[in-house]
Image 1 (cartoon, helix red, strand yellow):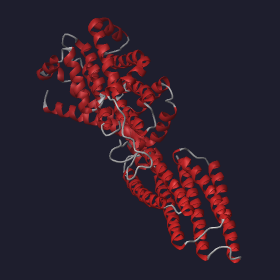
Image 2 (spheres, helix red, strand yellow):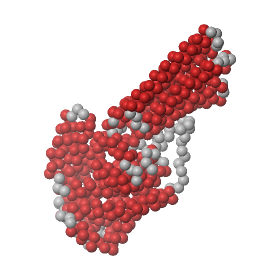
Image 3 (cartoon, helix red, strand yellow):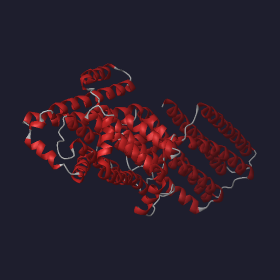
Image 4 (cartoon, one colour):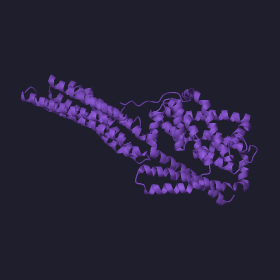
Length: 549
């Protein structure tokens, strides 16, 4: 085997890897938000979750991408471990689709598919069309890589170095370890199985076991494929680590069972698979699929026990960040797994947490205004500093993810989130202003009449109703009907503010309150009305963003 064949093999492998990356990224950008929605909705039980994982991975062409996404979902609290187990099991079947595609001779169509994808991507105006074209281009590149590798391997049979190396694999244990190591390095079982498939097609396995040695390489690939999810979980919470461990345990247990079966009954199992496989390449692809299907059928009933086992291996609980904990991020930041598909969801949950803090601070400041409690005034100021910290951190995070390969729908709606963060921060500012009014009232000895207190309480209650309703749609999905309802509520706040301002003027005219108390009352009413404006703005930006996806 000469240098030119080695270079052709390396180049083909590079094209294969690049094609898979382009396809996966194109699919994630074109349909990532919708696929995320499917994962959220249709994983209520392990069986439906298994089918979702299967379909998701078949589309994404990568079990590593699917399991890494599941790990980030668990880390974000969007999915529990029992739901994750079903999806991970299904992903293990879905990953066999790649080897099935490779086993068919599609390489002759690769140049046409690649050219079509590139041309459409260049001329298309729509970002979604461009992403779909990228998928086809990636598909074409992948099969060009297969064609190049296949051509290079055709001369391997004449190379004593290669045949000697493959002869060294003529041991089930060594073959398993080789499959594990190669897959862990390239972080894709699809690549290793596809290489094995091409070698089988060229009849390079000539040892004692013949093509059957590929079965043990596949078993090693199954364990090596867990590397990506394990690495992704390192920065995550314990639940994320347990999700990655589910993937590892499934493959280790399944591999041990299949290894024992092969050692006891290799010939009849191999003969059965060969009986409906047109050639050795199809044999490898069919074996890969059947191994995975058998493992899932065998282990799915025991998924609950596997999940419980992860709690034994990784005991204890994470130190939870409460929504009131100062200067700490709960859903985003360096200590949380970053995944483009869940990045916006994590940002929304952090915004929701910030909004609750602002709402609580508003009510605390109003309580301070009436009771003149020094501790309340002090806590309002401390919480406002925390809100400012969250605003800066969330804004920086939004800038960061805006430069990441986000799904198109998330990218289109990310601008609205900057506005949401700003409006929440402004509510915190108004709460701080009201605390300052409380200090002015205490210093000047200004007294409110019972009527004034009653009117401010009524206005605060209206604002609270609007604010709590809009906070619910930050992470939830609001509708145009919700927006109309919020508009009516906001108008009611405006009307009530005008009404009590007029009553306040009437009291001043009748000299029923002091000018100092009157100024504070008027400023508080205006601040509350503006909080209502910001609450409505949050709903507008959030709901319009949701409806644009």
